[in-house]
Length: 222
Image (cartoon, rainbow, N blue to C red; front, side, top):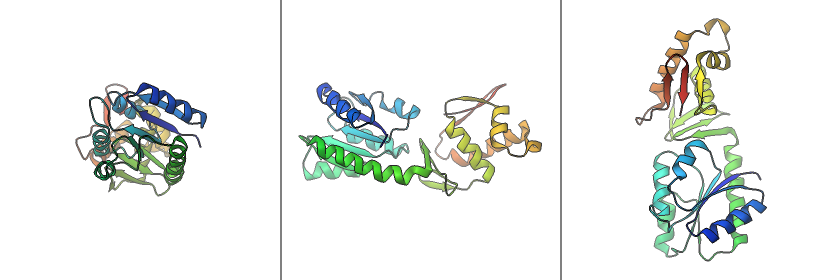
């Protein structure tokens, strides 16, 4: 099963071991020694799983997970931690963990748990697309912001989907019109501007500024 896994582990030897073993299983792995650059990475990529140590420099691992959950990231999380009391484990789950493995751990058990989580989440999410606090159910053509369903017209859904698929890219108006508007007769800049402004009102519920107008060119979604 191909998947992108992010590992956050402050012990370099353990990080390298995990990267090696997960790589042998066929996973794409990106490792970090702290949470410092992980949020920036999550803004650009959509990993399928996070493996997080709790005893990290700077921000404690479960606090970091709670923070990204508040921002709308729903990536599955497995905690690997020497914190092994009942209270610690409960805290990990309450802060957004999907599984909790205490150190020292059996690597084979970890691999089996990873496979189980990915099998469940990737099959459920096969018709879904998520970015930051926005998630799209492609089969039902439904959109959610911070877990709250928002009402979109067919055109607005298609426009949002196109933006999410091309996040971070400056899109010129002609390109957007050609890819989103089926009817050539309605492909007008004025129509596009109205639709974008309407979409902004729908999705920017928590002062999130997703859509930026690029003067003389078009828009960027990020």
